[in-house]
Image (cartoon, rainbow, N blue to C red; front, top):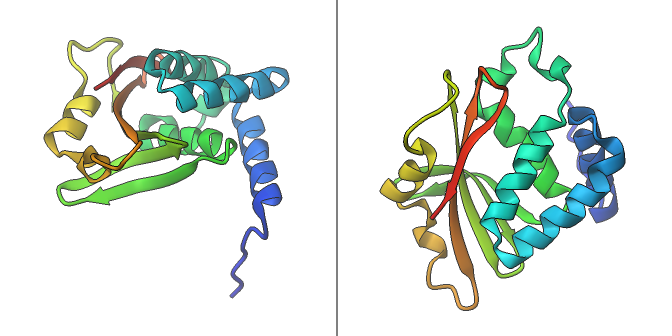
Length: 172
């Protein structure tokens, strides 16, 4: 049995870039999207974050959705976003445990903390955001509140199996 580790930051960033390239067909635009994503995360721009996530999934090859049931599960979307956020060298906590459960993903970049939950639905639209409601009901972000200089964002993402992309995202 072998245990492999990523030896340093440079290799980790390069590896995450390769994961993103495998997920997306927008290879030439990837660097521009990464720069914009870094900027919106650093400034707390939830609307900009949502637009970039939509753009990321809109640029994914349809082959990622054929002959596989992975896109039917929220873990697929969480994994894609994990790789994308990791390419920014943000601190990422998957399945971030709290006293009432666990958020799917927490991203910390500078003074901004993003507590995220992902849901996958069968239809194309929904009236409310169950992902954001879960974050708020279970108080996942409480452990980050009152940290000096930190701004905490709760973001619920809802993806559609039918449309193969993001259909709703709200921040609180």
